[in-house]
Image 1: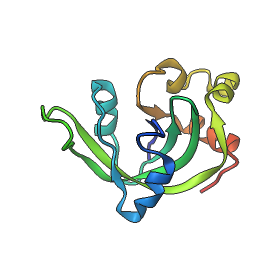
Image 2: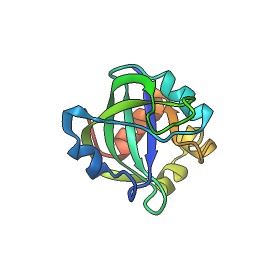
Image 3: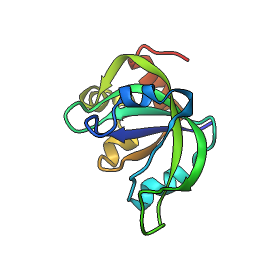
Image 4: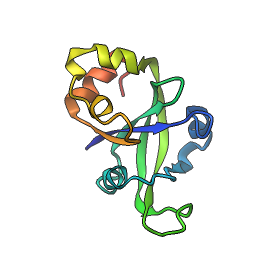
Length: 139
């Protein structure tokens, strides 16, 4: 299993929107960055990802699971980009802010800090475990 972090602007697609889709899940569309797209191409069914509210909130708010592999994104007229489908698994007990992540030495090398503009990021197993500890959440 691999771990990821997916960023979303809450006024465009929020954790509540994701939860409301239920087991059907929702396609993670609109990604137009090749590195982020390649990250989605590497995802497998059952992989887990943190759902991160970007812009003003800048915090991890939930956990989603990949339920459909990379496939065409109908919002991309060029046909160059695709998407995965994810479903909500659970909210985190304690949201983890970007400031808290940056302040934690164990997370100094996390992709979220090193590649802050990327919307789909890998998370190492060690970083996943530390973020789960900080979020006071277990699966």
